[in-house]
Length: 293
Image (cartoon, rainbow, N blue to C red; front, side, top):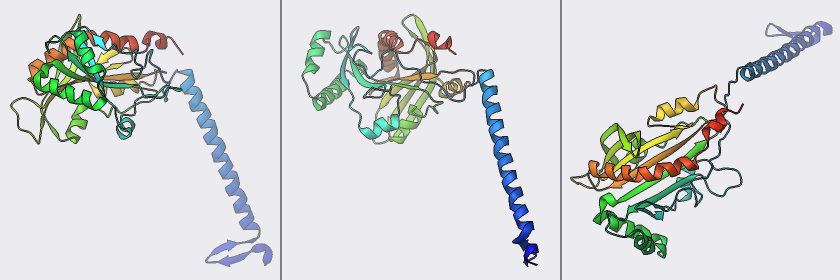
């Protein structure tokens, strides 16, 4: 009887039958493991043979936005008078790329003032802000914004690479979360210097303040794998191209407060005409990465 095992609840446990059952389970387990390993190896070989890439390799900028030399402080009549000091939570949420060995992520948030519109000389405007502490600079930028609204443009540059990002940080989401309402939104084609640029252009009102003009006008677009586009979903599709080994995108965002939509657009286009060539110099040479395998 001992060799046959015992019957418990209609099942035979212990004895020869139970040992054989366990052996069969072990064999089935290792067969399944072997099948999975072979399938994984086959899939990897198939992806490699057809140049399919599920994970993107990072593409470092030629000059990171965080580098003082990336974007000049003086661009024609425009003078960079303030660089925003973002707190750690904002930096973490922004999640811009950081190249190995660098101390800061690849972003630049700052304010430019058009010296001519503000009735100043470029050198005088530079000196006016040079020696001021950060808080005093912010206060003075707001004073210029109240007196010459179309002379002050805030700029946000951020860079992403090495992953198929969801492109989450767009004004339609971020500004609404901060208590603004969208008054008007459109995709526009702007003549900027010698180029025609497609941009998303939005007007926001502040729920806490009543005003005849928008609280702020915001324009944004992206530079993706060597070209400009304004649609965040198109950016995502470009990043998820399975046949591209490398991918990157940079977001360019401009903001002008307390003035008309038309005046804001003219100010932004004037700044972009001198800003964009410098942004493109800092971004990767995409042709170089297209040739790589």
